[in-house]
Amino acid sequence: MNPGLDRSDTHEVFNVGSELPDGDLYLDDAALVAAVRREGGGWAEAQLSRFGRLTGSAGYRELGVLANQHPPELDTHDRFGRRVDRVRFHPAYHELMRTAIEHGLHASPHTDPRPGAHVARAARFYMQSQVEAGHGCPVTMTFASVPALRSTPALAQAWLPRITAPVYDPRNVPDADKAGLTIGMAMTEKQGGSDVRANTTRATPAGIATGPGAAYELVGHKYFVSAPMCDAFLVLAQAPGGLSCFLLPRWRPDGTKNPLQLVRLKRKMGNVSNASSETELRGALAWMVGDEGRGVRTILEMVACTRFDCMVGSSAAQRAATALALHHGRERSAFGRRLAEQPLMRNVLADLVLETEASLALTMRLARALDSRGDAHEDALLRLATPLGKYWICKRTAAHAAEAMECIGGSGVMEDGPFPRLYREAPVNAIWEGSGNVQCLDMLRALQKTPAAVDAFFAELAPARGGHALLDRWVDTLKHEFTDLSELEYRARSLVDRMALALQAALLLQHAPHALADAFCASRLDGGGARQYGTLPRGADCAAIVARAMPRS
Image (cartoon, rainbow, N blue to C red; front, side):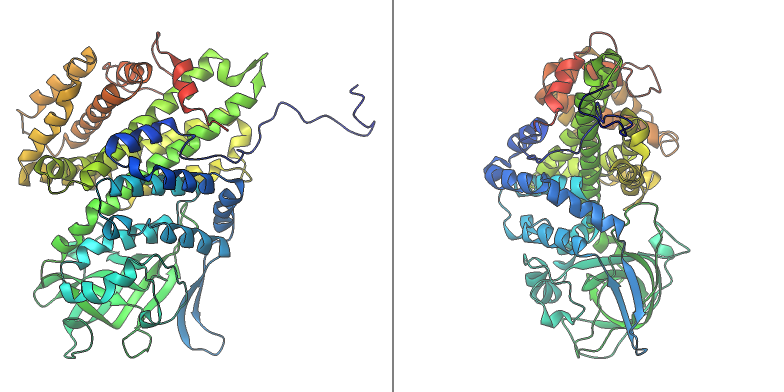
């Protein structure tokens, strides 16, 4: 008997895991540091490390736990019977929002558009998303609203200074009383879903000269309104000239409540901290954004940003799950050895690392493309690779989370740990901002409308030519695919899968350590078909791959 135990003690607690210690989510992540430097954001390293220490602290991670343990609550009326349409959040949610906005996650590339601005902002969003994903929704929508609003100068002048201000003000008061504003979106209706042209919400000219532009009154319903406590929403509605985009504030200019009425909050499987609501518009005042009848085109100005952030968020989820699995494998022993030292577990861990690093490499490459929209190659690549990357990375995350959770064993599925939240969150980004089929169809549209996109794609792969025989054969096969355009829609998913893997492999061959790039190509491009994680071929240097990704703390 252990002399340190009392006779009434049943056992000694040993050989168990522990919480992640305080760390630096930037400097502890070699792949992230390399990507930031490579893609043009190196000038922000001091800021990123400070942010990495904040987001990597145990106290900050606890905010993410609390924001999901205490979900938002809806008050449709106050206790006197007045309509208020107010959503109450836990203080942890507000602290996460305040941190995100004060650090520019909602606007920094718009206010400081130097080269690498999108790269630096993506790195911060990547670290913040590892702590908590739900609050990223209003942050992303606010960020993405800027290009759309710029299409209407009067609205941009009136709203953008406060939208881009690094000020978080959650009060339920008119926007005129705030120095900082957040923007949401209200697109989806029951009968249409992704087919927004089926929307039935009506927009009628209001016949008033109040506000910055053409005023309309909107009547209809919206089935998914994320973050309904935002100060205003971009809304699609049928105007006399066709489907149009509008900016709809929660308060009218005279200080009265705009009749955007919350019916209920959605009970979502994941994304618990973020309020999503059903709403009814009962003559809500709004101003047209862009041209009448061109609502879809106006909204598409946002798409590159929102879908890109889905990629960032899913890449971050992969990193969070991988770090937890690696940390556990470093601490836990079985059959006389640390888990991370056992060949089969090391194969699994290394495979999880490969997925994470490939996702990050593609995401940060597209961040550089966002920084270079004036360059024809970069713009064409972005149009093609954004739906491609959003489809691939976001869909891979659910299986990745499940495998990482399995590395922990039975404790991994317990609700007092981090994995149930990661697992429930994992499918969200694959669905939001257009599900998998929508992304594939958008990729095909990009091919049709921007023929230069195909040339940009293959030009992006060219520098990796000769780096690995498997990739060379893979690319040659892809080129042949583009000579046969029959049944292209039917084949779209298969094509997008192979294009995404080609991009990831090319990036890793150019920029990642040889052991990592070689294992990625050997495991993903060998033509072996469906595979599980942990099936890396013989010869993969799993020890080196795991060591590179292991949290330093």
